Length: 75
Image (cartoon, rainbow, N blue to C red; front, side, top):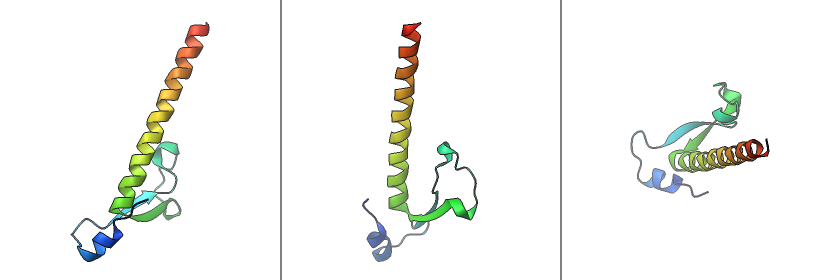
């Protein structure tokens, strides 16, 4: 994961430092906002994590559609 922390330290900008992130993503049932499911990430890392989670979610939806179509064609 490419971290933008170095840039944040050298050229800090207001509102562009830290984000709260769920260890267990909301879409996997991690919607609780307790501290046990939260971590702090730099903005760049949070962006990368979110991008990877979006790709994973898309892949899961595509696989589910294929499975549904396959099941429908068999009946």
